[in-house]
Amino acid sequence: MAKIFCVANQKGGVGKTTTTVNLSAGLAKVGQRVLMIDLDPQGNATMGSGVDKRQLELTIYDVLLESASIAEARVRSEKCGYDVLGANRELAGAEVEMVSLERREKRLKLALAEVERNYDFVLIDCPPSLSMLTLNGLCCAHGVIVPMQCEYFALEGLTDLVNTIKQVHANLNKDLQIIGLLRVMFDPRITLQQQVSEQLKEHFGDKVFNTVIPRNVRLAEAPSYGLPGVVFDPSSKGAQSFVAFAEEMVERIKNM
Image 1 (cartoon, helix red, strand yellow):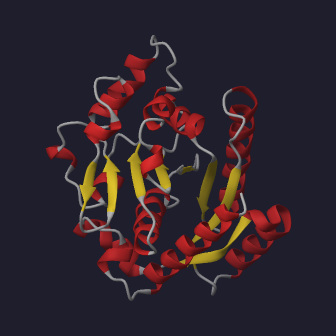
Image 2 (tube, rainbow, N blue to C red; image 1 turned 90 degrees about the vertical axis):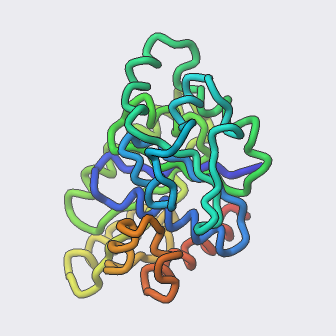
C-alpha cells in the first residue's frame, strides 16, 4: 500500500511545490511508483511536472466532487516518470461547492482507497492556507513533510502548522504525524541560517531530515521549462540533493 504524504507549510513561498515535484521525480528515479496530487488551484505542480493544466479534461476538482475517479483523471508524465492528478483554476470553486456536501473533508481519502495499492508513494502539494483542500490532504495522509527555510519567521509559521496537525490528528486522522522537516534554499554562508538549522535540530531531533536542499539556480529555472530540476538538470547540486532526499525517504518509511 502507498505511503501518502502531504507537503505542507502555512507560510507561502517556502518551496512546497518545488519540493513536491522534485521529490516525486527523485522517487521515480530510484524505482518507486509515484502519484503526485496537485491540491493548489494555481496548478504550479501540474505545470512543473510537464503537464499542461489548460489541456486537462479531468482534474482533482472532478475527483473531489465525485464526478470522476482518480484512475480516470490521472495522467502520466512520461518525462518525469510519475503519474499526475492535476489541478487548474476550476479547483478554486471547489472550496465553496464542498461546504454543503457530506464527508467533505474525507473525499480525497475515499478516492485514493481505490488506487493506492498501485503506488509506493502518493505526494500531495497543498495550498499555503488551511482550507478545505488542505484538510482533504491532511485527512488522507500518513504524514506531513514540511519544507522550510532556515530563517526567523519560518519558525513562527512552523508553530502554527504543528498546532494544525495536532488538531487534525485529534479529530480527523489518528495516523497523521510530522514525518520530517526539510531544510530548503539553504545557504551555509549565512550565519543566521546555520543558527536556525541548529535550533531546528536541537528542538526536533530526528524529525529533521539529514538531507539539506541548497539554494540552486537550476532548481529555480526548471519550472519555466515545465520540468522538475531532477529531470531538467540531473547533474546540478539541487537535483542531486533531491535524489538523496528521495533515498532518505525510502529508508525512513521502512522504519515507520
